[in-house]
Length: 94
Image (cartoon, rainbow, N blue to C red):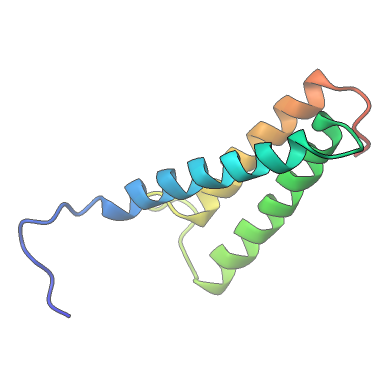
């Protein structure tokens, strides 16, 4: 399929940001209804997203420090959120 010359070249970064936002909304909604507590379930879900993003980034062979956002950057954002959750709730076992 031919690329239209007027389309922005930074579209993948926008897609990553939208994907991250939607996944965070889903994770927050699942964690809100968990029986083990919000912080513990959110931390577990964020760990799963960290592993998932690393595996997908490896499979797609995306560069870790590319010019546009990719799964590796998304993995770092999930890791930062996980550290934030773990820092606010000391009951999270790591």
